Length: 203
Image (cartoon, rainbow, N blue to C red):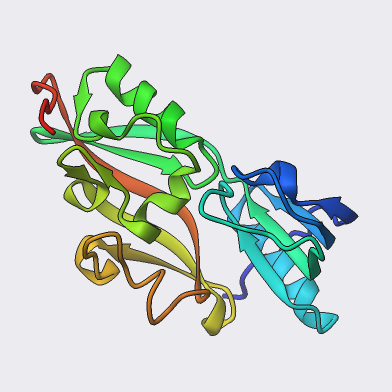
């Protein structure tokens, strides 16, 4: 079955500074915002057909863009949505990579889902959390991640579901920011959170 590709709007000469937490950097020659798997695949194919380098942008944290900008396509992953499915003693909560991380934590806390409450205030998007195995105050996302859905740029845009063991988590590390940096574009993350459990209070 052939993968579907939908081309999102391609803009030209778009400043990247406002799309990073540091707020600095020059423009992207081309820029697109991908709201779905199909749009991300389409944008990357569009760049490949034109011989343009492509950079996949998430929430823009831990990213420094040069004043010269980027001479290619920058495609921001803007997949949204939060879905919760009860699973025994936990609830599996899947969030699109484009969801704001702090907003996701607030969403979980408001519903009494324990597991990420110590990670409030960390900048960036949901899609960046498995990349660096985000953590603080005794919690890290590797403790709760069930599945990472990601597009494999080395395999023609194939989308794979990777379980926690396949992500290679270590302290602030994963397969996504070490040997396979640049290979994967995170689409969504599923966390196993505990309804009604006491919040973690430690330092």
